[in-house]
Length: 166
Image (cartoon, rainbow, N blue to C red):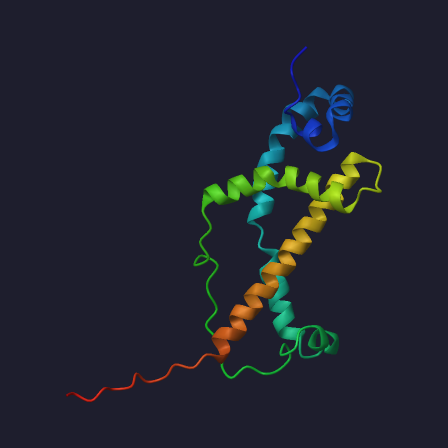
């Protein structure tokens, strides 16, 4: 019998349920499906959905009064539009993407246990924890980028005061 305690299903749903899932699964799925999980996690980490939400926020925030009550100053016009950074300028290292993607199942499991302890199924709890983690982290990232945008839009460059020579 091989040691499967470090395999993905055991990690997410628990040792007993993971063994049951792996024993009942088709060997072809185990051969093809399990190795694709880390690849899919890495590709999922590279999707920048927060940028799309931020564009929608900037486009429609003046039309949604509820956003103005929650976040004051959102709907007011900005004195100037800052230059948008290109996606290539936002450099994130490959190591950071890899480590973040591979630690994601652990974070999803922990968040699921903390926030959704009433859910009986380990797999459902982990999926809900992953969705909650991604949504909360994304909301913070969108808010932070919007605040940076507003700070750049309202900044003023002043002339350097010339000193008199003594």
